[in-house]
Amino acid sequence: MGFFDLFRRKRKPTDPLAAYDARLDALAQRAQLLRKSAATLLAVRRDLDRRLDAFAAKERDAQARAEAARQAGDPQAAEVLANDALARERDRDALAIQRERVATDAQDLTDAVGALNAEFEQLSRERDAAQVALAAGQVVSAAQPALTERFDQVLKLDAARDEVERAHALAEIHRDDAARRRRERA
Image (cartoon, rainbow, N blue to C red; front, side):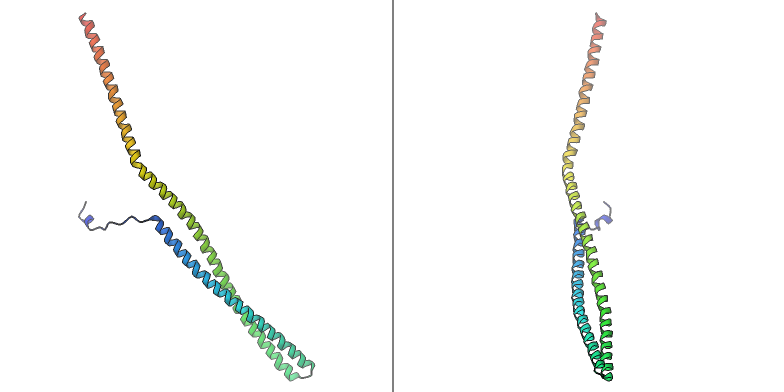
């Protein structure tokens, strides 16, 4: 252990699943905010739809009144009512542009929520697989001492077998040597 090792902080082992959980929480929060925004825009779109219907009704009413004034022979009233109908049409067109913009934004937000949900589901499946892999790794790590101990026993048993064979070989050599000496004496 070196001098600088004394000053190093020992880091706690991090939980790999914590990174998954943090990302899943962040995705869920973003999706919730986007859903809320999309719902707000959809409510605004419904309000604009009602206002567009009201402007269209006022425009039709002004056109009908202008036509009635023309038929009644009042060109001045017909012109004023026709201008009123034209103003209602311009208001309706401007409101229709706003409605289209709001509808596009709401659709974009809805699409973003769908993408976040897809990422959330994919990451959730990945997290589940990681959890299984970590659990399996922990089980194998816990079993490792048993595997190592067994390996040590196998090595000891092989060494014992080698020792027994050496003893048999020495005994065989000793018997052969003893038999040879007996024959030489005889």
